Length: 452
Ligand SMILES: C[S@@+](CC[C@H](N)C(=O)[O-])C[C@H]1O[C@@H](n2cnc3c(N)ncnc32)[C@H](O)[C@@H]1O
Image (cartoon, rainbow, N blue to C red; front, side, top):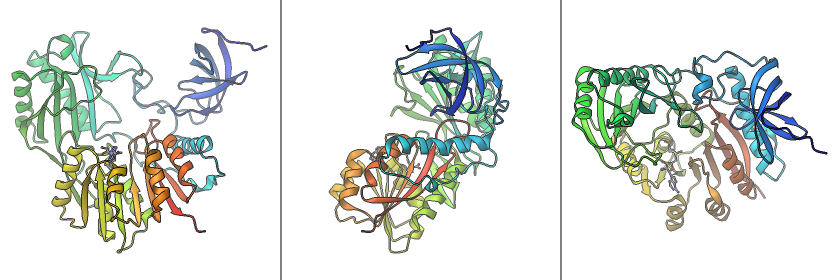
């Protein structure tokens, strides 16, 4: 008879592996037990907190035998905040874990035999701290003052901080400068009758510019005055916006109702000799150092030739097209979001790259409507939802010779590969650590048509 555990039960548990959210997984009578902050190889004393049909959740009470990978997190509020998931693990081991997550997804979704040696070691960072170039944080009045912070996973509880060790140092500095000014000017956050709901700060790596966006419930003189002050007082601040967003249920920060308060419309980033002029709502990879490595990797894996016709599908503001263009004849950059498509046009013009053709629309529809485009290589960089059947069916029908697939989600990558392997073979999958100490995994997969 099955011996069930009740919530509150405490047991000793051997942790066997890490799950997709960085949690340790052990088994009690074949039923998985998920334990946050436990590591593989550990013997842990845990308390059952939830009993679901197919698994338990438990909290770590103490480790009886500790993994050699266990380290002290460098962030003092790591265990409360929840923004990072693997700071209790040595960095090199987090990279092994990210490779393993790709292997686990392939094992789960790819039905044909797969040679695991094709999955390379993950490309990490030399210095995996202060890597985020943009932070979008809620502002709240809490315990007698305005604070910024992160919502604890799955709760409305804001864990406030002054210094986040994965954000650029200047981003931390400017959040604190703004909070000080709000205090001096007796301005309150939205939850205390004021207007500011969120603050978004972007910092460019090469030009050291700061772009501030106040996401407000309604426009107000005090926010506009504060924005002007920040621009006048600090040379680094070169662009300040007020964005009206009344939708308290929406997860989006930006709306079309945005006004430049002070400075320039854009800040300038430069990578690999390419100039990017960034509006506050433009999608730009959040880790500039690793984004450069990602795009270089795509160029390396593509082994492009001067006669190649290439499609950059899901192009955003077209950074991949700009990295690839000097090596090929022509690149079509397809993007569905109008604002990003327009930024792509400006960026391409700014860089005088005449062999890129930006196209607005859904990837599959654009490819279907423009059958005259016969790509030698298609580079994909889709959102977390992956390519999906519509696009994999298109590829299986039209069979471009080579596919370079940048993915930010191992599960959808593996599901797409399961389809594509009907006509293609995987040459390599290279994981890349875009978000150190989190459970996010990026990768670049090279696929070529199978020879008969
Ligand atoms: C992961 S981002 C990649 C952007 C770009 N390659 C980069 O590195 O900055 C995915 C992009 O796909 C776009 N997108 C989402 N669904 C799309 C679709 N069905 N067709 C075309 N573009 C789409 C999004 O607007 C977003 O810009």
